[in-house]
Picture 1 (cartoon, rainbow, N blue to C red):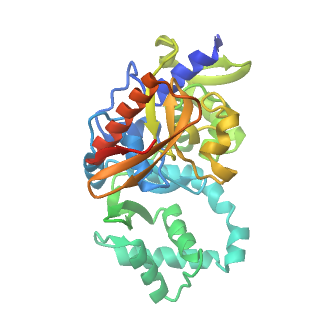
Picture 2 (cartoon, rainbow, N blue to C red):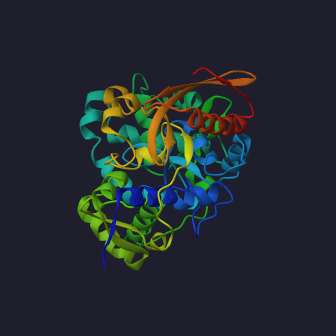
Picture 3 (tube, rainbow, N blue to C red):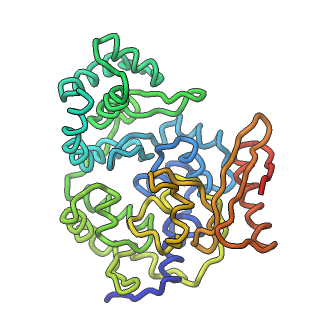
Length: 367
């Protein structure tokens, strides 16, 4: 039976699935729990990825999260849509194999423009594989130097594409930063015991994780998030079986984690200060449930894919914020998209204080 959800109910379930409010069954105690819950979390910006984890792990600090990533509780790679995500280490390889093939199939035109060939990409993988073997860890600059020493041209965007290709093929992955520098390691060495689900099992697992981690979603949103075809997305939802339940939001068919239907669906009034590249907005094709279309340009100026950090109240984006990090303090400027009364401002201050505490810095305001 299909359950009809009001927009307020759908939003409450969405925030619960996104672990931005208490969940009846998921009580993540660390980075590994959060990342496995989502299956993949967008993390093209490393600092944003750290806070996406921190906001879902109250009391954790940035150093705690970094230490967990050094313990390989999760790693970063390019599993879907050519975009960097945090994924469970043991799931990285099957995710690349399931969703990365479509990304690889679409590179020919761009690579011709860059003067790259598949042979160049394979050569880059061989070079980096040899350079990193035996527990090696190289910065981005060191990886590019190794490629140049092997006779590969890394000028312009070619270097980025060769690094991307090596990770897309499952040779390398992105390790935590050393200082301010991105580093690379061998995937086989950082995830030596990978899961190996068959394709149908992998489709079902990916669908369940995406749906449970995002609340009510459509098959088209699953297709967009994973980069799969709509046909494969539809099949994935079917394969997930009773783990998912059909719902209807604004007259449109969707699915939700079946366990969520037994939870309270009353409207919520939580206040969060989220990073720009967070699953809360990036995980969806249609963001109108969370973001007034009139405010879209303020959140994504120029519609260029660069999302500003957001202030979220009751599931709706009500402001954006920027920050400048100093030696002893983080200075935050809040931009109101709707008027803040004194009570809301106090609650936003409290949320930002939590962010400063995560960084281990004092909070300074510049409203």
